[in-house]
Length: 174
Image (cartoon, rainbow, N blue to C red; front, side, top):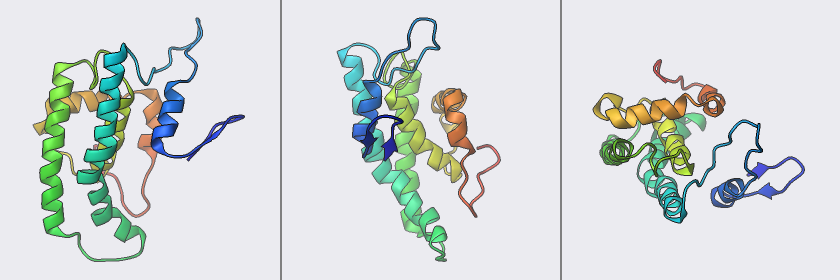
């Protein structure tokens, strides 16, 4: 849910990002804003495809399962170790997804093309969770690591990276 000052109350990730993507462009003399869906029609379609892949397949196969196994039980006061079989499957899925992100990052300037887009933010949001939980072996995916470093270095991402989960410290490299 996102409340816009003097504007609408937006619910759901899709309606929120489409609203933001259609927002006003920077005026001349202002700082350049990130256009969430830059480029031509095909470029915008690719950014939407990758965003859907991140919020769908990547989330279902990796992020959600890591949260269910490693974070939510701790936050609920539950105990017990994560299910090793689930973690093995999730880590195999993560390797597949990181390989794909690395392939895209190697082939293009940004995941969906020449400019940073919503696809980069969607992938970074998912990877940030995995990175925070210490699940990413970045050295095995140098193109993905370089791309993620560029995303993390953006001033708009700093506040997000400062977030912490009580009782679950981030790894030193996070």
